[in-house]
Length: 322
Image (spheres, rainbow, N blue to C red):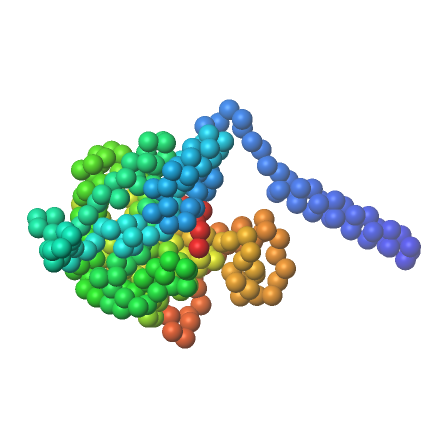
């Protein structure tokens, strides 16, 4: 009798297990209709190269290398630092000329902007069918609140906020208008304008750095959109997938335009760098989790408190150098 009951229970258990296993298998079954309409999935992260700083693109060796890489990879755009650095020469309210034997004279009628090198930089890219992925950086020395606040790179980019946002806004407006006048809005509207570089590291000197970066972004985005609503602007251009959700929530809360979100993780970033843990995370999982992190609120930092959540954007994660 006991044996019969045991066998009956065993049989019932087997039936239940088989039923549950079948249900689980059915729940995981995936059916793909090869004839159904498809959704484009452009690999935008494979289409942009990071490349030093802007002034280097005027070298013939740079342009030769650019053509070689373009022929091999057919990449679409290039991103570099420093289009506003003094070596490019855009902003100089005190520009002078000096003739031999004569004292310096202030340049007359040229205004405070000189687009000569900027035109040569972008003309050179477009001549090779490569579009600029424009990183709007760094601070012109004569516009900086602290011109001695520099980053550690050998060329010492000025990372200070502007001494007056009216000066920054006017430069951004003039820059965007000049590009449209030279290349046309239909072309410029295909470019991405990314505000600054890695404000969560030592490339931004505002303090506290994330809230003051948001102020920089707000001014920049509004100045660009004032020129044309078709200009694509985005950020936060952070390292280590940092503060993306906070940035998007800030834009949503304050009705600030944002057309794409950008961040990056480097091959030598560790789990401690990106996730603040001691896990051993394979690189493919690191990428997946970094993307997931971009939708997650950052924990408050003793010196950084930001609004956070999410906002509707067109995502883009460009490759970029430090």
